[in-house]
Length: 478
Image (tube, rainbow, N blue to C red; front, side, top):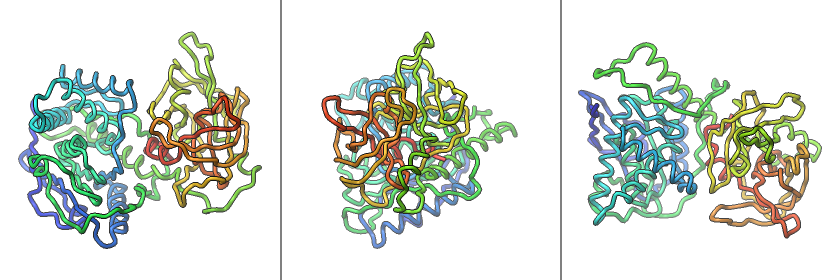
């Protein structure tokens, strides 16, 4: 069935960030008004304006009026597995019009809109290239599907033709990323690009897709980290795992009470997930150090993971960090990969929890999230009050060689980039089995996840830092 919704861009002039926040595109006779704006340069009090935007939009989202997201940067495809998966998703979409992604199932009325949006951006993309091939189109659409799946699942959880969705992105300079954000407008999103360092250098036909708004001169600017608004009432469990867009009810835009309830639940799920995404990063009293005995007590929030093969035999062990009350555990991808299922052991709990749920993974960052059916007590993740420093004391907790929840101490000895991933080098001893365990600062916050040790060196160990943890696991914290 063909798409019955058309999108009309920028029918009103947007002259400020505040105007972008306030405007809500109308919907009439199957036509939706949307906005795609490039805000150029740095105005006075820019950081404060962006922080206020996050707070205002976040509160409206918590109150159920809109969906909102601010994106620092789009992720790269994590590796061969992801490239293959999303290329296959594109092939399946080409075959039957349904894109079964990891976090979003695209079907029904939303499927019609999604398919039409893909076709339109491909048509535009093809006009910017000479002799474009099927493989180039396949690679481009695979990226669009990947970005949509990993970044926007919560945003579109309660999608309908009238939903107000706003996306803000920083310094979008690549044509494919720019077209991805245009693609979002064809799903009904209003998009604001904060081009404060420089503007895109792209063909005129691409530049005319968005409305230019000059705020000031180009400059570098440290915008505040996006911290989703926390609503006081959102203290119950959320499950932001898989989003299924409700089926189209028919040619008329009238949904049954059951379908409305399903959509409402999806909105509430995504709203709570975003509102609580920073619960884990809310720090204890800033810079108040704990003693080693106090830090050792946090081992109750570190788990041991036994990896089973198809015969049920244990092939390896690793560690994991509780990050969400709803059963979400962060570990290394190399711990989770290859397992048929997992057994999770928790300190002071005689029960062993088995699961085969790998909710999310990223092979480049070597991170994964698994889920068990148990209420958890998550650890806070550091939010960067000040930069980490060499010589800073740390504590590592994990299960080296299966020795459950061993605690060791050391210091940060350096900062390394390994295969384009920023790593923390630290001296607290770890061994095989420690992978996936926590590296804590002296306030008891997770600053990294133990990932690797150098066999030929003494206490040369590496951890994926908190910045990548926050980016990867956003939506699971509670």
